[in-house]
Image (cartoon, rainbow, N blue to C red):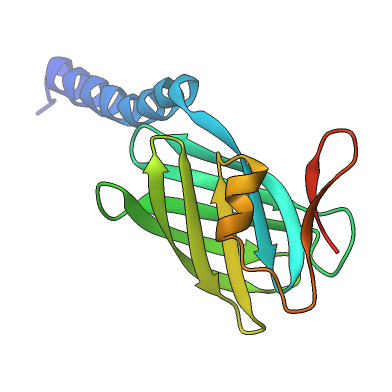
Length: 155
């Protein structure tokens, strides 16, 4: 006995709609994503980049440096509370850090963690003067503003 085609069509239509909903949610949230400048010190090396905060209470960290052992780090971010969360940071040299972050406002915050080689600190959305207060500068080094664009530099 053959099954009527209508139930089969309804099931296939429902599956297509449900699988498309996940993609629509992903695409719909990206225009509302906040991209925020970030600065980090990882294993005594300064990296700069951005933090992207997504309305679904997740995000992405992307950092880079033009010189040194670490040239890039990326991480996923998720909120664990109203103004706090966790970042899983991974760098090209194999360094891994589980970081805890806190928001100071909707788009400003800081994070701390540890790799096997040393401390990690990160700020996002903060002016240089404020960022320096949260970044853990290695002993015998200074964090200064340099160049025309006044970017932070570790000396």
